[in-house]
Amino acid sequence: MRKLTTIFSLILLAAFFSYNELYAQVDSDLVGEEAPGFELKNIDGSTVALDDYLEDDAVKGAIVIFTCNHCPYAKLYEDRIVALDAKFKSQGFPVIAINPNDPEAYPEDDFKNMIKRAEEKGFTFPYLVDETQDIAKAYAATRTPHNYLLNKEDGKFVIRYVGAIDDAPRNAEEAGDLYMEDAVQALMEGDSPDVRHTKAVGCSIKWKKS
Image 1: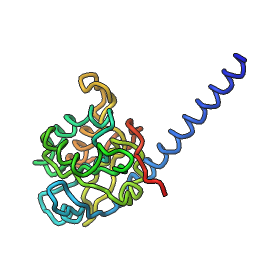
Image 2 (image 1 turned 120 degrees about the vertical axis):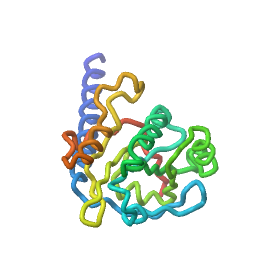
Image 3 (image 1 turned 60 degrees about the vertical axis):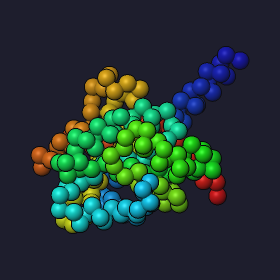
């Protein structure tokens, strides 16, 4: 019995690593590709399009983050997301947050609660709802939070980093590698990020049942 349990555990472990390797490859493949456009409803009732930022001469890129209200990992990163916007928006790299979750399955992620959460946490950036989930799929997002750094190049946005904000999802003070910050700094200096993709750590996106 113990031997069977060990074998089953090894199978699960192998499947886990296969899954992670699959999505690591997807994230890697996205780097260097043109960022999919979007036009989504913001919590203030307005519509925000990625093209709006493309037409703004002050914008050099964008930090696009798929996140939500209910996920514990998303909550742990909220202050860090606010800090990213505070640090980099004035330098041309604003945050754009997008909630892709199915609100029927997770009512805490519905539009009314998005407004409430943004007010409670003092969001200084758009918090958009991906009602069809088409944008999350276009970006191959799988987690909340799942983070993308876009750079404006030749009249379009190009994905230059995909993955985690840092290496300490549970405690910001323990972070040793600030992946997103370092990637933004590299782009601002005219360089490519040293680390172009990492594993996004968070809750799985709650997809609608077809």
